[in-house]
Amino acid sequence: MVEGRFHARAGIKGYVLLSGIWWVLAVSWTWTAIHNPEANAWEAVWICAGAGTLVVAWLRGFSLTIEEGKLTYRNGLYRSRTVALFELTGEIHNVWKGRRFRTDLELKDGSRFALNFGPFSAGDLCELIRRIDAGTSPGRG
Image (cartoon, rainbow, N blue to C red; front, side):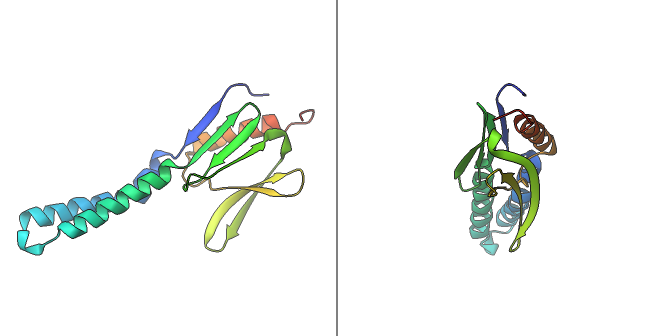
């Protein structure tokens, strides 16, 4: 079994890709507002900065934690779900749900534990899978 606590948060790529465009727009509208006061562009600055801030707050909600033999996933709306590692079968399913892509971890009772792996870094996901494999290996639970 892999010992120690594991904790992952949204990676820098998520922040850059999802909120970056809003901050670029806010800066460009700020430049327009400063250099052309008649354009009345301050409203656009506040809208873009507000959207960028909301995306950052949403991404801050994502976390994965393995501690004391339990996996806890918190989504972007700050809702948490916990499952014991020994309840996982080790099977991973990639699922399209409507227009959204997600990953499901299969539980021994046949149900699934849904995760959005998008915001996390590849290194954190590799470590998560390694720890899940170690926690679900035969002889556990």
